[in-house]
Length: 102
Image (cartoon, rainbow, N blue to C red; front, side, top):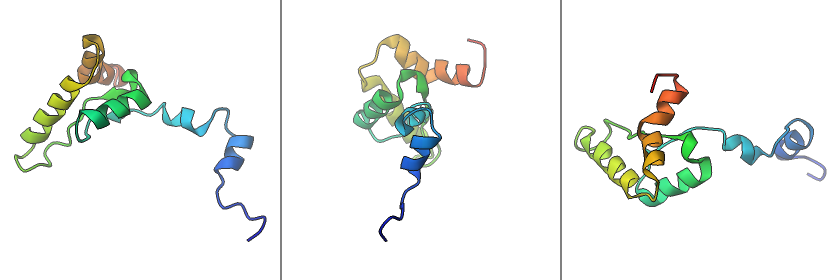
């Protein structure tokens, strides 16, 4: 298959996109529904504190939702974040995203 392009991404990037594909991914919003503070800190590092919102995957756990809520809060509270950044993730970013008053 000589000369066949198997992935259109290099062509898109070279001819259509103004930025690297990675830069577009960083504009997404992520939630905190992950397993543990390590994964959460990794997501926060990638997306940035302003693009992460609280989420717990409730009610999908063996306690009907309370386990995931409790463990997600514990994981977020274990992350090395300034209090103002933690508040953004718990509430502020979602308020801004859906345009609710603070």
